[in-house]
Length: 122
Image (cartoon, rainbow, N blue to C red; front, side, top):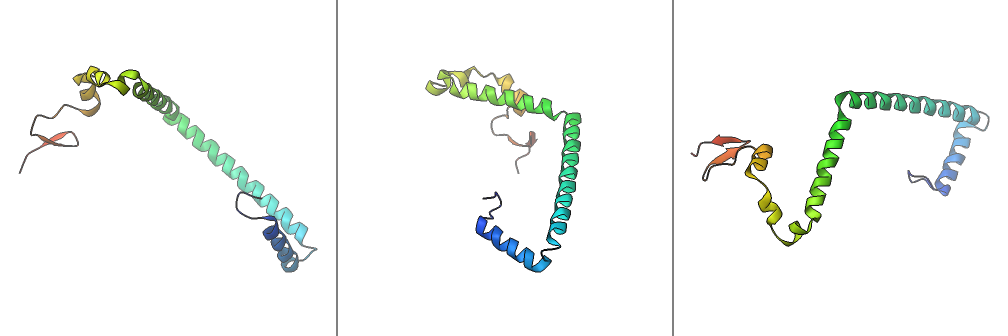
């Protein structure tokens, strides 16, 4: 019935227990107070979400998201292109400058690099 896994039979048992424990006269008051509490909690959650949205907007997350989506689309287009599926001509067309731009200089043969820095062999 509900998303949190309580069915009709469990809800019925909970209602009977509430009537027995709280009493039929006080049950409407308790349920009203519970509703008011949940209303306040939801209001605080909305306010918190609003603050998070403002902070994300100030931090420029929207621009970062657009950049990531455009990169994802470019990768998907490259992978789906016929040249990528049939041969390595697309990979061969990538220039050394493109690799260096994203990953730093290409290491010299026999050279070990850690985090982009050359490490002396021991």
